Every structure is written in C-alpha cells, then in structure tokens.
Image (cartoon, rainbow, N blue to C red; front, side):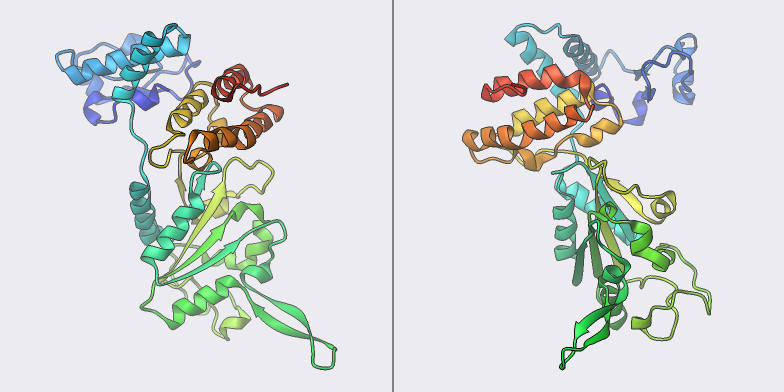
Length: 365
C-alpha cells in the first residue's frame, strides 16, 4: 500500500525494505541521502520505507498527508463517512497511476523487438491474450496461434507422424507439421514480413515434452555456427540453428493457476518476462468495486498472493444489475475458492463484509 504512494523520482531518494518485520538488516541509503546532511544511520535497521521531502513544497506535503491517511486506513481509524472520504482523497492525490493499455502495448512491442521471445504473465482477467492478439493484428503481417493444454505434444508444436485411413481403408501414416514449423516456414519464405507466433497458456503443458530439442533454438542472441543446429524433417536437410530474425514469439501465462507446470530456469532465461498487473478497463459501474478489491489485496496479500488479484474483465458491466450478477456468480466463487485453498486467510472477514455491502448476500451461508 505504501509503495503505491512512494515517489518515484530520484530526487526523493526513496527506499523500501521487502519485509517490514525485518528490523535487523540495515538499509543502504545511498550517496544522495548521506550527502543531504540528514542523519539516518542510527535508524538504518528499523526504518522500513521512506523518502526525503522538502517541507516548503506543497506537493511534498501532499505525500505526508497521503502517508498519514494510508496508516489511518490500515489501522481503521477513519470511522465516519467524511473521515473515510478524506482518507481516500489524500491517498488518491499521490497514488501512482497504473499503466494503461497503450503503455503496455508500446513496452511489449519494444521488448519483442529487442528480445524476440516474450511471456506475458498475470492474474486471470488482466487481458494478456487480448493484448497479444492486438499486437499481432496491428504490428505483424502474419500471426499464428496455439493454446497449450495438458495433452499438447511435440507433434502439435513442431512435427509428428499421424495415422490416416487410406483409399482402401488401410492405415497410412503421413507427416504433420506443427504450428512452429508453419511459422518458421512463413518467416523464411517471406523475409520482408513480420511473423508472430502466439502461445496461449504456455505453462499448461509439459514444456520439456512439447519443446523437445527445439528448446535449443529459443536464444535471442544466438551466434550461428556452421554444422550445428536442430534437424527438423519438415524444413529439409539443412540444420536449423536459430529462429528466423523476422519471427517473434509471445506467450501468455496465468500466474493464479497453481495446478499447472512450473517454468524451469533454463526457459526463463530464454524469454523476457512482462507482468500485466490488474487494472480497470476505462470507466463504468465496476470502477469503485475494482478499487476496493485492489486495496484489500494490497492490505492482506503476500507477495505471491498478489498474483491472484482478479483483473479488469471481472468488473466490466453496462449497468448495476450486470455488475451484481458478476459479483455473485464470478467474483464471490473465485474469492471463496482462494479461501478454501488456504489463501488470503486474513482477508476473509473484509471480503465477506464487502460482498454483503455490495449485493446483500453472504459469502458463507
């Protein structure tokens, strides 16, 4: 919660510990704070988060008010409606804005240009697949898409031998090209075209089995060595030692699904990772509810549980009736499932109270 209202500009010399219960580890304040003449050395172990301000500047005093208001909200001191309104106003004045879709799109496009292979990770409903498809439609000439699942195999991605009934009903076998080979062929045959392969839900499959030896090709800065490479029958006799320069790959990964495969460190190194944080799409009925749920996650969630916050698509509604239906049939079951899995345990009462205030129906009967 305090990170959201921590100034980002270097002149504030901001600092923050990853664990507020740690009162042993000393913070390295840096040269700026040391040179400022402010003596923080004696507090370097117990200070958790902070920044330097100029009390003569109005905008800096706004940060002071926001931090006091945030602490008041954390401790539940605002008991009346005017007090809660003031607290919310002070916090909103300094709260860092979320990246909008245009900013996200620009950053991902630039990342694809420099790294070639990018994974969009985030909670359900944050618009990962939508963003990948939008980039493909607007920035690339050819787009290929595959969605991974538990039964996805090497033959789906690269190549395989498939049985087929012949003319006389006898079984014959023919070579089947996977979508990666199709994309590679398209890129090789059209060197002036930009080609994008979208892999949706990349970690729902057994990646070691699906990628097989082509794992070797996913290296953004690979230096080609004559005679080395992966031999793929569908691409002819010459070994392939890297993905064509005009072929990029963007994959999506749901960080809330704990039942799916873990991506190993070797694959992590080959991809750039871009996190899409939950945000509300535009304005509308669900904006206030989205903000309330976001604040509850900030208040109660651990680092890993922040990945569970539902994205903006859960809150898109044309009217209050539609939003109430989404609360009852989408949000409440999702949050209850988290609690049943032992997650967000300290937030149970706050969420129960929020849903009852919104639609007058209990989370637990």
